[in-house]
Length: 336
Ligand code: NAD
Ligand code: TDX
Image (cartoon, rainbow, N blue to C red; front, side):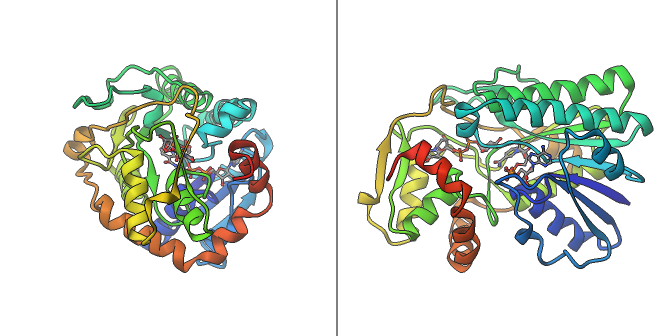
């Protein structure tokens, strides 16, 4: 099988390529990535010389590049996106361009040969659940996005579904919760917290830190996508999540500080994110019943493993934290 992975140099895409090439070494992978600030080919050092792996530097909004990349491909697994909520609040345009227009370009090319298309999306399209309730998002939950990022992902989901209904394109969609693990870009909460503590800086907590996220270890997400690609029903959406209990951002920060043997003076409350979703929780019963999906990794255990990964890969995140990342950091957090 030949797969086109878009955004394969990013956090989840690179984990997915490493996962897939280990599990299915006979398959061919084409990785199409623009290498924005979030794309890092260092993540793929282990496979770059593999004859079954090919990298194309290019933009998913570029029709010609997409046509070349999709040539002879059996399935597209579409990760490429602008992915950080706070950046989307500071400047939304690029999110609409890549996440909506880029997805449209890919769908149009896929339509020519009815290429199987898996779209990687997020639970953020569903908006926010109430704190203190047992409610969960599922495949029937109405879309209600809060940020320019989640609105752009919602737009892309709608396009993918429309291409199935209108043109009979063989699509599937996954809406997953917050991932964490190796190669997670240190602008996102968990890797930012870990690397800040390692640099002697504080963990920035938005508002009171009472918001809840459903944390999913990235390898579980890759396994979920693998199941959908192999066994998912065409035209269907699957919700993929990790946690069974609610855990607030503040508790996550305290757990990180404890594991890293830092005291709680290293937490700093700062101004809240505008339109901040307070609670996410995923009901993954459908993926479990139809595909046998089950998150194997517990949050506590894999938070510890993730911290160890960042401790062992200081070179990786120090290189990432320099350069353009610094400009964004100053805009978002000032000189802290
Ligand atoms: P990321 O920001 O780490 O990586 C995105 C990748 O896409 C980068 O390599 C970047 O260079 C590439 N890219 C961006 N614009 C591009 C363009 N125009 N053309 C080609 N490549 C481009 O993102 P991530 O966290 O790995 O997320 C991957 C996907 O999973 C996204 O679609 C995101 O919405 C979705 N998702 C992420 C999470 C999460 O917790 N990170 C959760 C659910 C869903
Ligand atoms: O400095 C911070 N302080 C803080 O309290 C940052 C960066 C975040 N937070 C809070 C905001 C959220 O409640 O932590 C929580 C997690 O924040 P992010 O890591 O920015 O993730 P989130 O906004 O939940 O979105 C992530 O999960 C869903 C990904 O970035 C998305 O791409 C994905 O779709």
